[in-house]
Length: 170
Image (tube, rainbow, N blue to C red):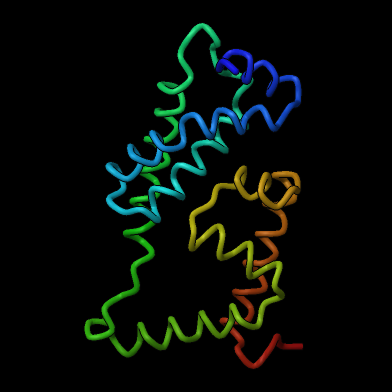
């Protein structure tokens, strides 16, 4: 199957046709992503997210152009985001961390553990993994506005647990 046919079938709702595009370009995308991120795990995440972006935005793809250069722009952006996330996720050096920082981190983990699982998932995906509202909406299969509302309330519950670790005041 040619790219143009696969893209047209995808636009008509055939999700399996996009599998053709993934199989055709996955190795190339992973190679480029590896070069940009510096490691296999981040490369795989960036490539997967770039393919997801491509699938979600296939309606805006200009079929008079080649697919891979368009995908590469999405991939490149994802790689840069992935590198930034990887730098931000690194745990602090325990020898450099102050006692107050360690206590604060412990309080945050304890509060997160006390949240309902749905709240914890949203907060971690948004603030630890750096997912966008749109990514959360797609992956959790809920509207973007619902994601924003649930995340707001989850943050409020987390804030209350941090402020009052013994439980909310009555």
